[in-house]
Length: 254
Image (cartoon, rainbow, N blue to C red; front, side, top):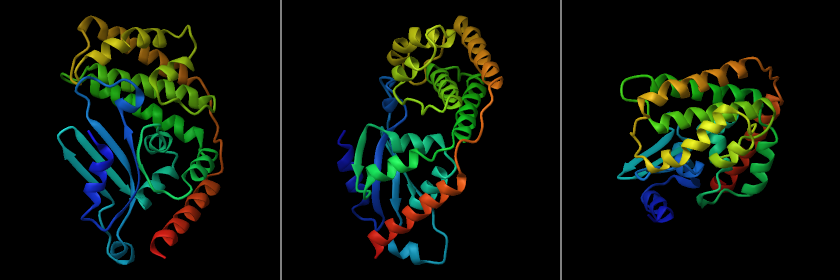
């Protein structure tokens, strides 16, 4: 699939300005299934008419066309989430699979942003994502390899956040940052190739479900015993994003 052409075609008849688009999800993390979608994510500047309009407009663009799953946030929504150290959009910023980029001085912006992230907020976000996945997987017909590995990623990323380490995106690189004797790491490394050969909705065998739930809950208990302090000044992060938002709009809108 020619993703860059898809993005350009999508914006051809729109007045919004596309800024930055990447591959997200399982393909970015190196654990895609045979039937995984292309999860294209990023952000845009709303049209000049919307920017100056006093009325509130929708702050995202969503397109689902076959295996092309596209979501774009407007700049205000994107920066608002970055100001909260939201891990999902931080992964977009850090992604190594980039399809489209016309964000001025992107490297400088990215470096400055990542130096101001609050690891405490990052920790709680990842922990919440993992726990949410665990709740879903225990409902009817949802105990999938996909949900299990999403929860594993969340907990391992939360663990690294307690050490003020930015979590790796590739799942194998993430494993390498975790203690080699960690039982959850052992399980995940043993099952990763099996997961990648399964379709998105493939269920974990019943015999394995209680074992992995036990390992996940033990990891949560261990994380609960760790303390983590606020690691950055929220006001500095917010001011950084405010300044970049102003400069970006000046650049494109004049």
